[in-house]
Image (tube, rainbow, N blue to C red; front, side, top):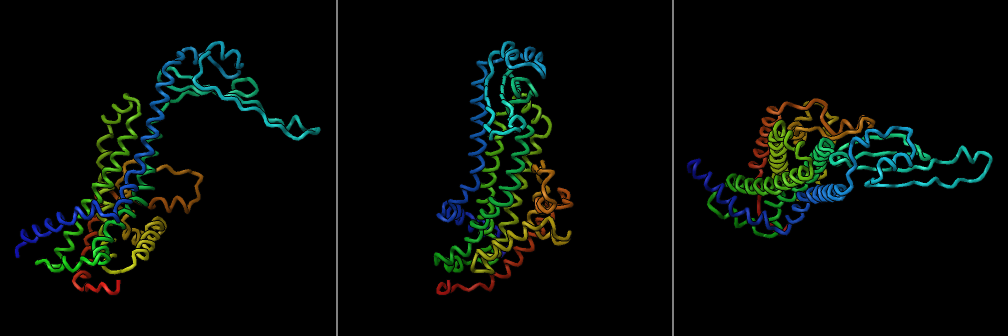
Amino acid sequence: MTNAARLRQVWTIARLQLTRVFFSKRSFWVYLLAFFPAVIFFAHGVEVKFKRDRYTSRVTPSSVLDAIRAGDSEGDVLRQAPGPVSDERYRPRRRRRGPDAEQQRTPDRRFLAYWDGSKRWELNFEDGILQTKRARPLNDFEEDRQVYAGVFQYFYLRLAIFFGCLGIFMNLFRGEMLDKTLHFWFLIPARREVLLAGKYLAGLIAAVVIFGSGAALSFALMLWPQDPTALQTFWATDGLSHVFWYSAAAALACVGYGSVFLASGLLLRNPIIPAVTILFWESINGILPAMLQKLSVLYYVEALCPVPPPMDSNAPLLIRLLAAPAEPPTAAFAVLGLLALTALVLFVASRAVRNIEVNYGVE
């Protein structure tokens, strides 16, 4: 049989398998993992839009707010700017009585916020005297980009895509064994390696579509409430590049984890054992020797992300090492390295599928 004929067989098997992968009852929780962050970003966008609409009716000129200085009293400030959009007061707590009661007294604090049409001004008072004043955007674009980077790397790559691929690819063969339908696939006139390739292609298409859509929707909802000027600058500079590399990282994570869990489903009956083992290996990737780091999917896909995730500088060294590899590879090496690792795992899986025997009585 020619290679072209085998490729047609692969596509036919993948096409037949796609409906089962997308609509299997075992896969519904995968959609929840993929689209949960989008719900969070949508709620944040609604909150920002609501605040902006509410603040629009109470605009204070920035020239008035610029004239306010630290040391001004509450009365002076409210006479100059009588329309705060937020007014919160924190009364001092009652302390036990005693000779040192005055030293234990907490100050009377008040927080006022103003809106000048583009920025939110925050004024903090103690005992009626202005202590600090700062202006910042209602929605900080750079901060939201950092938040998305954290969600993508800590949630999507480490949890959602990992467990999503576990559910999708482990069931390609193991699920057929549980449903007692695997023997029908073995009866078709195709080599088992072709069957493996077709099932892997179906799982890969499903995983990329589901998690790519979830990540793209979350990214779009993160951009939705941003200032139009900031968005225009973003699209004129790094916008398309960020979209491409986030998409590539999500797709390649599905490629790598898909091959690993497909092979695990062929070699092992219990999915818990490989899941826990691989999750532990991926989690300690940052503290492994450089050679062993290259045997991790996370090592490659994290290097493709355009924005590093937020990390507290005061976090323990071990946490910082676990969060990212010490020396990430270049983008080209990351892509080629992951494809090479995937090819190796699929080669092992192709050897295993040749020897698999259908025995439903032991499942």
